[in-house]
Image (cartoon, rainbow, N blue to C red; front, side, top):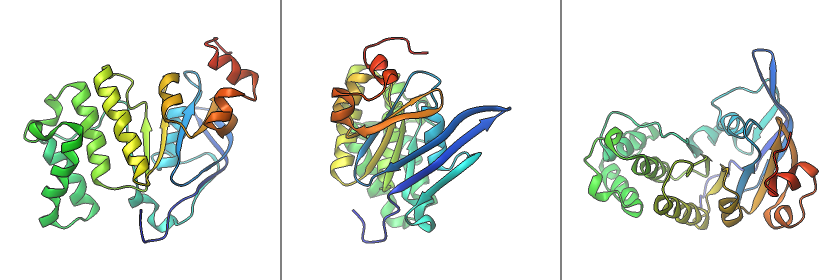
Length: 239
């Protein structure tokens, strides 16, 4: 995907996070392998979104280490899409143009690049519409298009389809598969087990702020190693 040194693998060693005296994540050790789709699963409150924010650098860990293979490039070689898109008070096109400008892309190339990003997400006809007036599904597709335009080496996705209709969900899943085929590493959370089965190559399962197990997706879904994961996959309320 790139000729420059890869920022991956990403290594988490004994990662922990505490807030207001409460330990929300503890002793998470995990390797994010390059060019893979890693899905983070677990019940509500397990720490899935928190783990993404720590990896992306939005929060500082209270314990442990986050190590990139090329730390000097890590900040510019990653992107994140949130469950509720964060969009500027600009047009759909303007949101992508601004992101490209911040990343340092040449002015003369930005508009063509932004237009190419809007097209596969069915947003070309909405390029001049204010981003914050788009529907929820359109806003999420715009956030994905903006991330794709930046060509990150690793993309973090926090419940990217949680509030979308089936048509938008299908399009987002298709684009995630396309990103992956282009060599992008995907790390995402989802509450949808069907989606996890469709997209995951690797799975990390969290429960009560701990990494209970991590394996390739086929092994996890066929033979989960922990009682917590077996209960979760069976649809049980795990405590």
